[in-house]
Length: 113
Length: 115
Image (tube, rainbow over all chains, first blue to last red; front, side, top):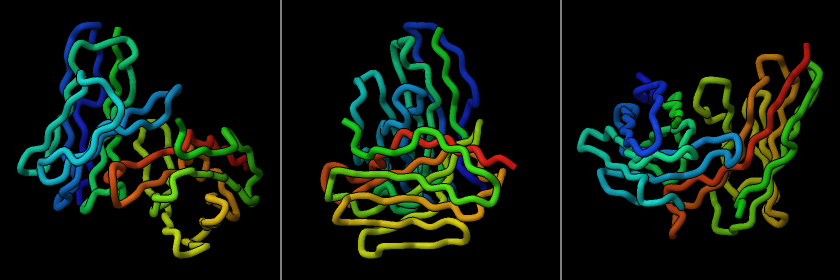
């Protein structure tokens, strides 16, 4: 079985731009969640989608949004980028969600200049 | 507010030794406690997990000890190997309420195993 695929692997943007990150979950997995990883804050939960519905959202500003498609693939969008958005963005998929048995992708490393 | 507190921040162990990483939590609604291992350039990978109805779970060289009354759990790595050198994260989640679908992570422990 193929693992969780995230594209692109690296991304460089400038302040004020917007960015879209993509995640393809493991086949059969219905839940996709997103996490931000930084040296200062560690791993922070962004949101979780289950069968196309956002089931939970972390404490991030409204500039961070996401969606899930009928094939379970997910995208997250960050608008009006700030320097502090530089981070590794990780996508994780699981069959049931609820934070259990998450399989993570290798992430998208976003640098905001 | 850090819902899961992890220590130590870094750990150096001799090959063949025992590595011990500790975590503590506050929310008694948590009912699932996984440990993740992360290598540079990779996402975290699930290592082992436990539920609060058992006090210990062992998988190979990895053991989770769980103390529900103290709200603490720990990871023991027996016979530590250089290939175990990685960052380890404890986490917690709950299958109910406002925290559904959300994993709360500790800040991580950088483990180095010297040959």
